[in-house]
Length: 94
Image (spheres, one colour):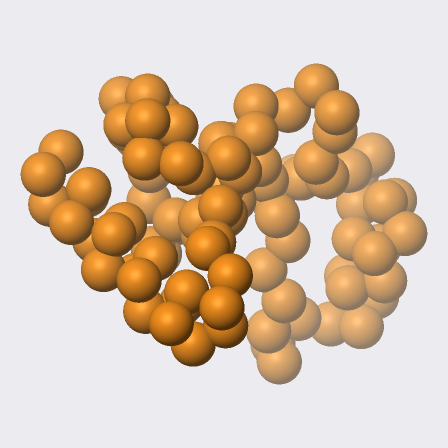
């Protein structure tokens, strides 16, 4: 976990020096995460983190495992609209 801790602090210092605010949120690089990291993230001041798991975040979601929708130019407008409105969470995924 020393590499994770180092990366957190290096990025935190860079963001804080640029914005004047200490970040408390993390987007997992490439969406890759392991539940074994959660206690280390919390211990290092991370309050919320997003995965690349597609879903709508709910109040019952773990704050360090928040899902999100990744938009890109390849995403059809109808798909984007479905996610923005929340309809996509009702549609089964293949």
